[in-house]
Length: 326
Image 1 (spheres, one colour):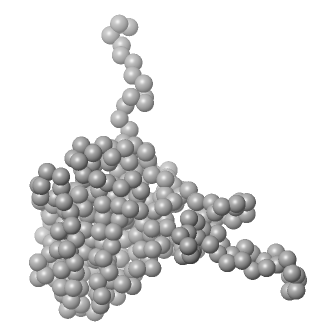
Image 2 (tube, rainbow, N blue to C red; image 1 turned 180 degrees about the vertical axis):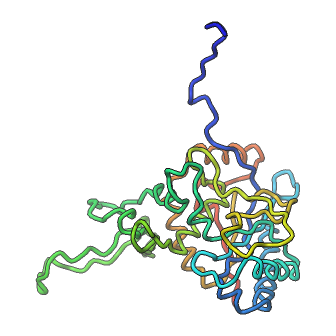
Image 3 (cartoon, helix red, strand yellow; image 1 turned 90 degrees about the vertical axis):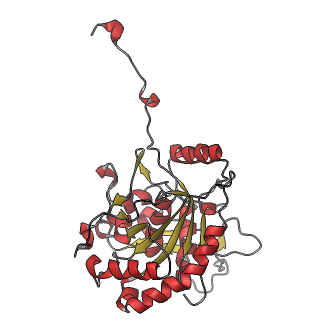
């Protein structure tokens, strides 16, 4: 090849961000702890029977501009991170049977530990939860002076200004007046929240349920990327049986070959009421995560081409149903 045949391209001209398919809605049918499964199959049947009407209602709210049937995928998250009282072989078949008995299909099954320990495309970033932690950009309270240590050191993330620490031991110091915490951008009154993301030593962190649920939401929204490459991509599961070890399963399984895409423009989670405070914490986290601009641009372009409205804010792309008694 001579010099005239050589073609030079700028690195910036090469595609960086992997393009993903998108459903209109990712519908979560539940998130149960191992203790819930230990109660037995009847507990699972009651869960899905209670979920079914709300799933139907959520599906009915999705409208496409051209009137075509919306793309809606379903998913279910199993907590195998905080405890492992059973095996996939023992637990998953009754789960799928209980969903089917209520007329529901679980398209994608995910392991919560995958939200913590799955490796990004480039291993130097560390496990997935760690890499998302590195993307947090804390919202500074008005008139803050930077005294508060960063979340990477404390493991705590807030949506406002904490009560100032006492800096004097003089009990009668008139200048040491208590001040209440305050929420950033509060409307009339504050709803202040301080969220624990992890505890333990840095080399053996235990991630909180709220932070792992934040990673889960980002995955469903198609916003988890590392150097442009997608993570937590579903793996087709076509085996007749499930293994006896959770680590033998991919982080996200595609159980239904005909399912709409796992990633979606928006999410809806039908959850027991005990998860309400957890999901409040999730929203605080999502408000302070910096995702790749290219991923956001792709979603904006794709949804605009369909004429399907997608909110600009990440938090506004998530919704919840907390059925009474679930």
